[in-house]
Length: 566
Image 1 (tube, rainbow, N blue to C red):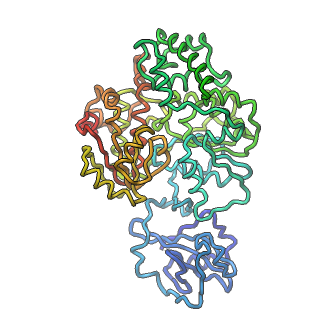
Image 2 (cartoon, rainbow, N blue to C red):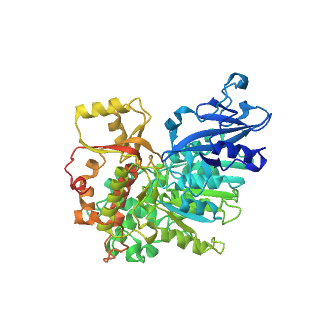
Image 3 (spheres, rainbow, N blue to C red):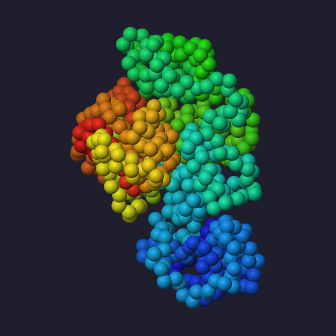
């Protein structure tokens, strides 16, 4: 039998460890008793016991050594959780491995070259790329595809740190989920004090704003009232220009002056030089109306808070950094006691907030702020998927191929397809919107924690809830960092059908036959298609990759060209 060891277990302090290791490795289960659900204890001496579990991977049995129980104090065990009274004298000893060992819990992946196991809510065996990153010192930027384990890896690296620590992300759902992962199995670390905060909560920890941020739908209504004629037609484009170009990018000023904005290069703005004067007119009106109606812009607030931030944290993790602007990132990192003690992780294929993000901008920020601490290689890339079934991964890769064929490469750091390491098959079902079919899906999902419904926009949730009684209904921005066995996509393409027609424009089936992405920028620098449509194609990629196994895709027009390509 093969042995795995939990990385928090100090084997040097376990009496007779080498002896019990040899016995169990040989399948000798004398003086072993079952004390819980997949929990066994092996006798070390009169007072100490070794707690372990049994798993299987690729047909072989693995014993995972978890914990040393001192003085029979089972009630103090993290893994027994104090909910069971263990009467050892009443439990029969095993003389051999249990007969049902072949039915032991299967593991998704074991690195054959490393016996050390990490643990959040489930067992983690790091592959070579993950293990190298785990050994590195900060600062670090981890770029990882969906399902690559980047959040799990950064949480495990967080356990290496001491002092006051901040984990921050734009998504409150991701923050809540990460906190639950971190403290799974009653994990404790007395050397740490950790704040798990959404970005909005982080800003409020500096100073509570007296106003609220204008949501996109309110902005869209504002745009319809104030746009000048038909020259500017797209509220989403203008929102991104306000959030990622005029504000957000420059950290020295709250927002660009008119002259500075008009002087930007072709690639630095979504709008043409001829359109920018009108855009800035609207921006000035936007500032006035926000003040009058009790709204604020989070970028402008972030800049104002730079002078309020005091060094507070010894270590910071910024998760899904691609959803933040430079100024938002700057106001976070300014809270560090030591400027280089940070990890950023993200994926520019998962940008789901308007901010004109690029890894080049992040690197430029660090260059100007001089926070690299002499390191020239901050960036590490993970592109092996440990979450999604091969069918879901193939669909996600096809989305990336369509994006690459239509818009060219985003950047060098994100120019890759995902490699799956999952062996369990799933399925993808494209379903026409039909009352009977919706009722069947509702019956499957309403009482199950293994199903979730995802829509493109927050206001679509109310419509989806008319048909699906599950409480697990999310917009794509809320779904960041979450995963479920089964995902129902509801009207994801139908709601923005014309935009997805543009995304598929001139893309052929031949474009989807490639095995890897070729790095190539769009030749026409005035072509702003990527910035205009990236939210929609990225949102689709994010939504698809929330599915661990199966995807049920409900659309009013299943004959849309996108589905033909996929």
